[in-house]
Length: 380
Image (cartoon, rainbow, N blue to C red; front, side):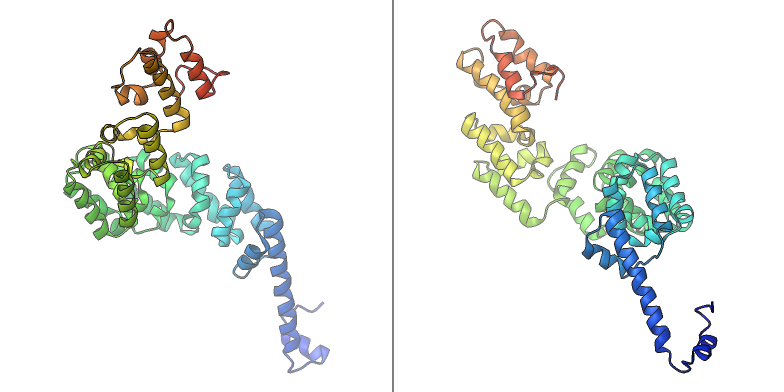
């Protein structure tokens, strides 16, 4: 058999001198077969839709399953689910034809040695797979070390990378370091800087000007940069657009909050602005219309707005309403004690002392929680 690449010899033997179309046809046929194999593999082995498989095959082609099989096997070794592997490879299909032992395994080994939690990290990598296409020695390790030195904590550095590995893709020195400098400049202690970055790593790759503006807005609201509430207020502001912020303020005002009520509530618990509008509406309706509580009382204890009505608020309030109807408690109850206290404290305060006067309380509470078949005390 004459090698396919020997064009001149082949042309003379078969008598097609000066006719390159024959070879173009064979090359096209070979490419077409390769793409067909790739598409079939992506559909059958990774669960791609035909449209996704065709799209990926335009950029990545292979005619044997050797490399992609090894890649998939490697990810499974680290606990990736089939769904996570499919999503990861759909996001970074070039990994399908990578040398798994030379190009992928050392990176997974590096993160493993740092102590990442693979159930979490596998899920995150399936969303942010780009880091696996970067050089380990030239990019990943230097970026990680620089980031770790900025945070001054291996534990926090690993936790941030687990949640947002793309933080190692940016130029850490030029992009992340200035944000840390801004926080230090305004008196935020290192421990809170680490918490802020851990909870919002994406914010550290945004515009430095916008980052500084948010820091200054939080300061203008009267938050102490040395307190953790400063971090919470920053995160609340960063997570909402101006229009969304204003629309949520309007929802609270519709339920009777004044400007002062809103200011006090946000000062007490900045995360009250991170609840969805539907959640705010449902909670305020329950507290004001069913329980008859004044809006300003809820503003003094805004944490209760984010609590589960089904699993916590309704069961406890149902017990309280029984006690109230029997004249065993006063209406002016501490919302902290009623709703925020631990399960054990709630039972000691509102159930145990009234076992004789209201023996039905514990049964009612269990029914509301749907915990008749499980332990009650200590459940949250």
